[in-house]
Length: 141
Image 1 (cartoon, rainbow, N blue to C red):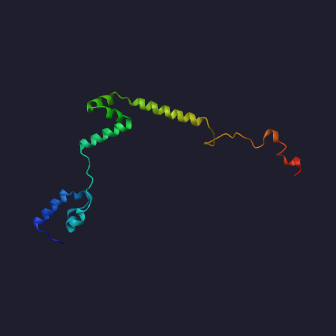
Image 2: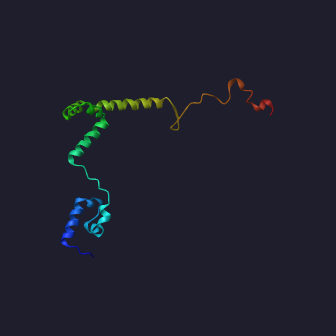
Image 3: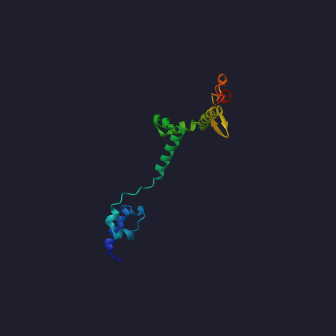
């Protein structure tokens, strides 16, 4: 067990907190055993502040709903909020339902056998005018 002087302990404890080494899951005792190794670690990613998180959620919501183009053309946040309130999510839902209906109509045109979609054959094994050519019994073979 190592013993440290008070000044040495205060110096390294302050450095431990300033470099935010605790964000890597390392405690002060581990850091004090070999401070040089832990000081070379890359800085840990800090969580977002509440204002940053709210701004990030607003951006994600605009990207998901197609309001990003509206946000680029608007000059102030108030204008964006007014335009976002005027936007109706039911339009997006109606467009999605129409796309699904078109896809289902395209699939319904194809025939199914045991649940699998198959293309109907456009040719037959025995053509009508060549019935004698495929009858091996008549040829005496």
